[in-house]
Image (cartoon, rainbow, N blue to C red; front, side):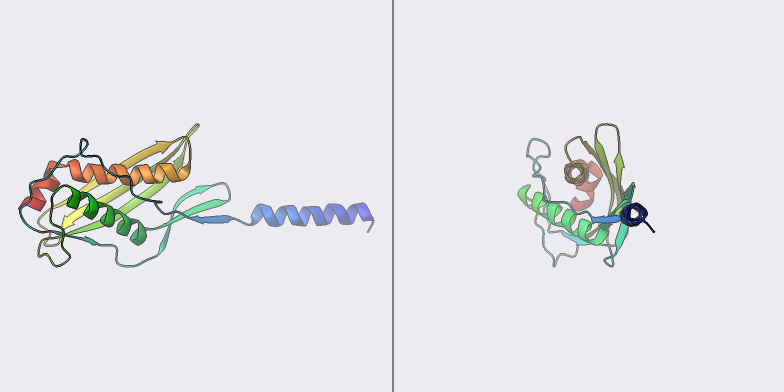
Length: 177
C-alpha cells in the first residue's frame, strides 16, 4: 500500500467514525421566567393547596432528532421545574401552598417536542394538571419559538404552559373548591 492509499484509507475511517457517531443532548429548562402581575393577577383562594409531581420515575425520553443529534428530556425533572415554578407564582398571588394540604393537584408533562423551522426553533410542552381525587383534570400547552437559541424556546414554552395554567378559570375554580 502506498502512502497516498494509507492517507485516504485513514482519512476515510476517521470521517466515517465521526459521521456515524451521534451526539446526544439532555435538555432541561434553565430557569423560571417570572409571570408579571399584569399578566395574571391576584387569586382569591381561601384554603391551602398542594402541588405534586405526578411523573413516577426518571427516564430519558427522546424529544427531537436533528441529523445525527438526539435531544432527550427527563419528564420528571421538567415536571419538578414546573411544579416549583407554579408554587412560586401561586404564593406570589396570595395562594397558600403547603405540602401537607389535603387538596392536592398533580402535575405531569405528557409530551414535549422540539421542532426546527427555517428561522427559529420551536418547543411545545403539553402539561396535565388534575386533582388527586380525580374530580377535575385539564391539559395545557406551552408553545414557543425562538430565533436565538434552543434553550430560549424551551424556557418560553415552559413559561407559557405555567401562564396557561394560572390564567385558566377552570384551574382557579378547581383550587377554590
